[in-house]
Image 1 (cartoon, rainbow, N blue to C red):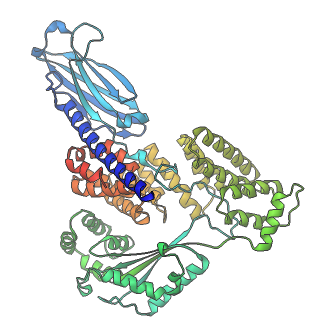
Image 2: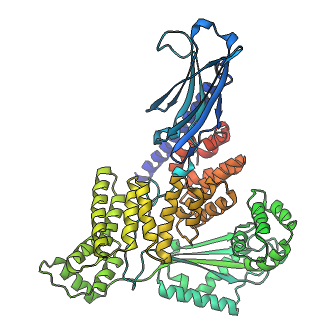
Image 3: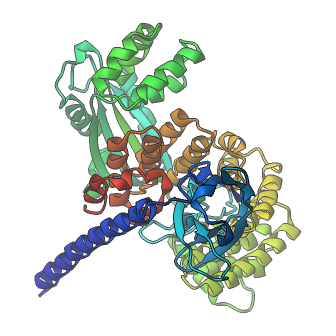
Length: 604
């Protein structure tokens, strides 16, 4: 019966995809027809400047200009040109454009600045031509000047929850310091190999690396994932065997022995890279052996989307590259070990019994210290259990910690409800708790969390002020990393893209932060740094999807249709929510005119 249901579901999915393609193709044809047919006589000279609408700050700014030949118009017919923004459920009438009569024609030109509203993202800007004195008469000609608004900045990730995406961690707990376990640690180690060899050797350097791995695992014994990636250097001595990287990864897996044998198979990932410049780009960041200009020249080649061999030939022609190869290529004869793990936390059996008793007591009896209460709350993964513990702590201790942390619980509970009214109630409770926490003792955490809630509520300026005040209160790099990441996201929404790039100078591990960083660079036209940030987002989580979408945007800007399609397909395969955006995004307007777009994107 289960197999029969699966077969039916698969059939339904295939039918849905087929209908989706037919709908999109027909819709694209109709849209094209609305622009091309019938041939306009009076609107043929209309021009939109810029030719695609673009969101700048909170506004859309554009100019409509053109001319109407006078010999084509009977003088009594009273010519009029009007403009409107139209979507399926909304419409904004922009009124008539004044016509200036000359000897041979009517000329018109008008500038517009519209306050952006969300429905405009997929709306059409339409110009209509009327003649005749009768009010309300039907337009004689109509032309679509633009469809959609280029607004990649609206993709910025603030921590909202979307379908098909993991629930992001938002809000910052105040920890006791004994167990800072809010975020899993991720660290990368490199084990070296001899040229062209895949046999692991216990060299002094590799022994030191294993010691560092052991120290990391001792401090963070709750392993979530280990990823081993074998790398093959471009050196001639490495040979042309594409399997060298994977055999190196297997060799390191064997050398790690019990360090990896005890983790679930699903948590151990093996990979390799060959004929790929990604790792060289990472090494170039901190390399001081060449000038900044030469480094930029190398980056431009490494990111130009040519084939590996074509890039290799270009690199050899750059002065100083031989020194780069001599210094950095040996560092690519490695297998990288990336470990994601958390410290162990929690109470012992006796402490747990005392906690249970204290939670059930109403007489205020308590045998646990403040630190033990905090540790118990930090250790549990259940938001309900955290709420119970922090609520009790507010009765027992005068400290900002339980109020702040209770507020974080409410913020995260709000993420898990679909009802907007319930979200608002939880946010308001969280804000009250944070105000109380700040009264007891001012902390940057309370300000950050207020800023996060205000950002969710759309009060971006209020959120920004809270985050700015929070940054001024501490030099803690872990706190600043998270606070500045959210601050940078708000900079993007405010249109201050250059400033936003400065917020992302920390060592992030969250793919959304790398994506936001890429957006900031994309918006100022720095496509080299944008590419690197989007690639980092992909490396951190290929299932996130947005990193691929960013790479597709850059490819589309550069006119690389095939590359854009490849990245778009990966983005939509990882996250189906990105499909709808790709069907509307003006950046991919040229792509949507090709049959390949629908065959590659609409079907897995």
